[in-house]
Length: 122
Length: 183
Image 1 (cartoon, rainbow over the protein chains, first blue to last red):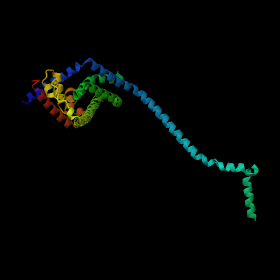
Image 2: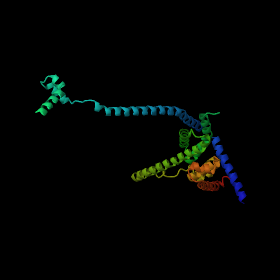
Image 3: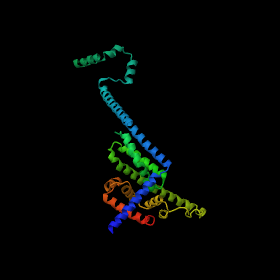
Image 4: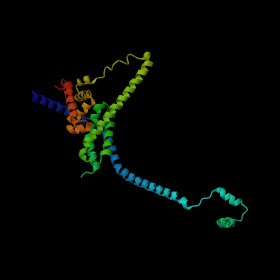
C-alpha cells in the first residue's frame, strides 16, 4: 500500500517536473530576450566592480592624506601664536598719533628700566 | 579554464528560466517576474560574485525568494491602500456606482477553475498558486530545482523540519487539486 503510494508520488512528481520543464522550454522569444538583457546588465555590473574597487581605494587614500594634512596644519597653527607678537590696531593708532619721537618707542624698554632704577634709588 | 565573468554568465544562464517561472507563478505577472529575476541576478553579482561557484545556487535562490517575499509585502500594502481608497470613493459615489461593473468577469477563472482547464501548464500553475507562498517555495525548490532539505532551509531561512512540513503539505494539496486532471 505504502509502496504503491510512493510510486504514485514519484509518478506525480515526474509529471510536475516534466510540465514545468516544458513551460521553460516554451518561453516566448520576448521573455527570453528580456532575460538575456537582465543577465547582461548584471554581468556589466560585475565588470565595473573592479574599476569601482580600484577607484574607491585611491579615493580613500586621497581622503586619508587630506585628513592627515588638515591635522598637521591645525597642530602647526595651534602652536604658532606662542612665538608671534600680535598688536591690536588701537596700539598702532596711539603710536602714530603721538607727538613723541619714534625712537622713543624703540627704546621704550630702556626708558622703563631707567625709571625703575630711579624709583629704587629714591 | 573559465574566468569568473564567464562562470557567472554560465551560471545565470543555467538558472534564469526556472527562476523566472518560479517568480511568474508566485506573482502571476511576467513583468514583475522579470524584475524579480533581474534583482536576484544583480544581488548575486554585487554581493556574492566573489564567493565560490558552488555556493552561488543557494545564494541566488535565497535572493530570489527574498525578492518574491518583498513583492508579496508590497502587493499587500498596495492592495490595502487601494481597498481603503475604494471605500472612500464608494462612500462618496455610492449613488454613481454602476451595478454592471461590479459583476464578476464571466471569462475570468479562479485558480480552482483553472485546474480544470485542459492545458497542463496552466493547470499546474493555477494549482501551485493556491498554495501559501512558503509551501510554493519549498515545493518548487525541492521538487523542481532539486535542492536538498538543508539547502532549501538555507534558502528559505528556516529549519529543515519546516521545509519538510511545507513540502509535505504542498505535495498533498497539489495531488488533491490535480487528481482529476492528472489521474
